Length: 111
Length: 114
Image (cartoon, rainbow over all chains, first blue to last red; front, side, top):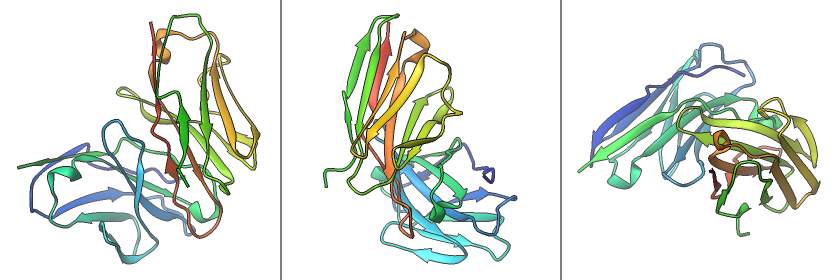
C-alpha cells in the first residue's frame, strides 16, 4: 500500500475554498485515490474517489495530475460544518482489500 | 438499510474484565473491518474479514484481543482481560467488493477501562 503524506492541520474561514494536498510518490498502477472525512465522535465517511484527472461530486472535487504522485481535495466555499479530519487513502480498493488511514489533515473552519 | 450498527455505544469497565464489542454490517457487504482510534495512534486497522473469514489480523495488538464473524451479519471484538491502555473508540466498517468501493463506518464504541 502506498504511503501518503498530508499536512497535519489547516485553518480556513467560512466561504473560502480549501485545497488539501496529499503526496503518494509510490502509488501503483492499479491504485485508486480515496478521501474520507471524519467529524468528531463519528466514524469516517467517504467523500470522493478518483484514478486520474479530475473528479467532482456534490461535496468536493479531486484533482490528480498526470504522474499521480499527488492529489488535491478541493472543498468549495467551506462552512463551519466542514470542520473535520480529512484522510487520503491510496490502494486497490476496487479489488477489495484493507483500508489504511494515515494521520489525516485536521481542518478548522472559522467564522 | 440502517447502516453499520455497533453496540454498545459506550462501555465503562474495570481493568481485568472481559469486554465484547458487537457489529452488524450492512447487508450484502462482504468485507468487515475493525478499527481502534486514539489521539496518540490515530485510526488503526485491527483486523478485517472477507466473506466471514479473517484475512489479516496483523493489527491486533496482542493475544488479549480476538475477533470473530460467525455469519455475514454479525461480528464481535473481544478483549480479555481488558487494560486501561485499551481505552479508545472502536469502529466497525463494512464494504462490498466491486466498483463501488465506499466503506461505511458505524458510530463507534467508546471504551473506557478504569
